Length: 80
Image (cartoon, rainbow, N blue to C red; front, top):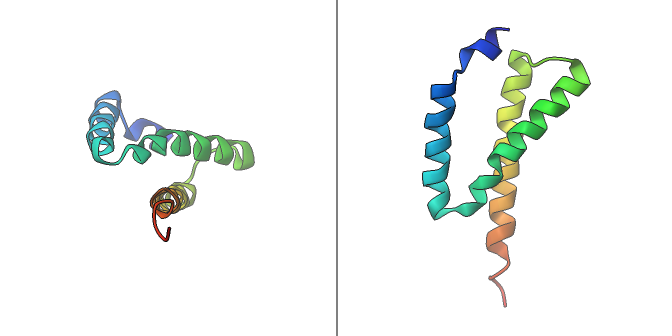
């Protein structure tokens, strides 16, 4: 319950605007909401709720997924 009430609509709007602005330079970032929703779905399905550990792990998993996506997206034009 603590995590659910910690973020309100105004914060989501600010971070959404930041995401849109950053994705202007790197459109790949637009997969972030899908990764966040996917992680939230998986954690709720697996353990029933989010915890501090689940939240921290989600940050690491999503960051890693974005870095992998960045490497894959930039690797296509090199070495030819």
